[in-house]
Length: 295
Image (cartoon, rainbow, N blue to C red; front, side):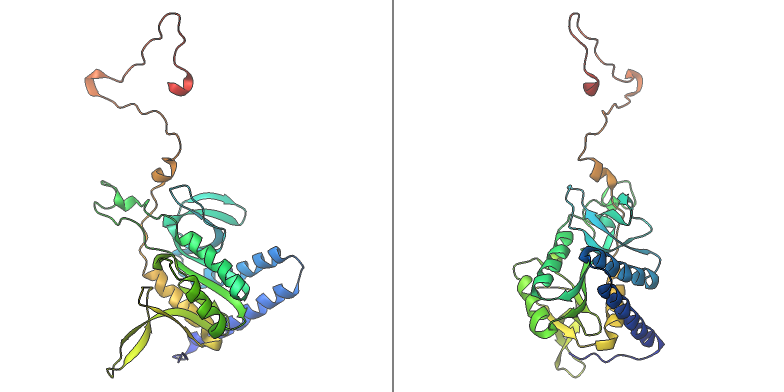
């Protein structure tokens, strides 16, 4: 469906930014031979753009996402995380490991989006969205809240591409096929093809004139895939939808005790008033005392 922009200085700013991004991506494609290095440079261009345009509460980086069950998703090209309350589980160079509860969005980048690269990008997003997000501080009595959520809401998962063979004949039907028998919470939420179109989910609702119309929505079993043929305004539209989705998610800080509980904790000794601390029993004569790891 065509998208009717509202005009104004902000839209013109993003049109200029879209041209600058396209030029930066093209220069990286033309220079160097190593595909991996080109990919890193592409990711950094998008990371720098989002870091400059999102509010300071959101951090942007490449990295990995892990959960309290010990699972780690595939390396994410772009991670949007809680910059104020997100403890890093690990940091090495430009890559970081984030607790799943600290992440707002994951974005996969593809220079050329076809059926094969679409399936790969969908798999990467799905591996992150399948992580457990229930290790939140708000769920524990005596902490921030007495009654908190069971888990943080799902990530916003998106794919950002520089070009594609065809949005209508390849991306939309390909994504619909990949979404079959997959829970809504693990599906890709949006696909942005720079300078061409934004793929999103839509619901049929009554319009002002009583006739049914389609409007963007969160994913449900009843929602349908569609796309805005937004051309030069695609980056602007992607930014607006991303900003809306980030603002709609309230994240509670991760409970890192749940993460370390999988490892061996120190031996617990509880103070019992007048009875004092329990004392270890002396070793019997002729027998060795307890080993240090059992003390």
